[in-house]
Image (cartoon, rainbow, N blue to C red; front, side, top):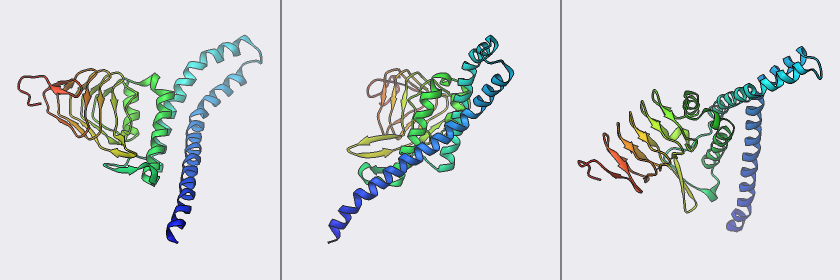
Length: 249
């Protein structure tokens, strides 16, 4: 008698959890977007108050305000989004294995965290990637980054799973993720880059990777999961292999 009861209740619980996630995502992201748009509305209201209806001056003022308004909205979105994930506690669980069909709360919190990251990436990433502003957003959103970190990629996810030292350079379209999905299970692992590490263009760095200080990983390379690369070395290839003669890889 207990098995049918559990079978009956499982879809109900799953539907409730999915519905709750959808609602909370819309509410939180709506608040984040709304708060980010408030200063733009104030700016536009000032333009309307100080210019006549249908005047050339109003047209010119609005035309000049479009680009700054978008930049300001994007910057505020990064700040409020990162603050919202801190307040809600939405994060990628550390060193976890989460079965998707279980729809556990840690898994659903990870989903909501990824939604927030993707929204900022879509709206603000093209403007600020490769700049100190993008690095500041990553740090505010959970990444533990050293000084003078340069990230010219939008394909970094699970920010709270990233630990970079000082003077790290991440090239364009590099993919660094703190999660992978295998046979219906989400697995997570921290990615650690030492001081003065350089990751070449379009390289993929998988979960649970540690790269020693002053190491360079060449473009179009693959660093497999659960890998530790030596410091003071050069690695290239799919999967990566050490190039310098003294290497053991």
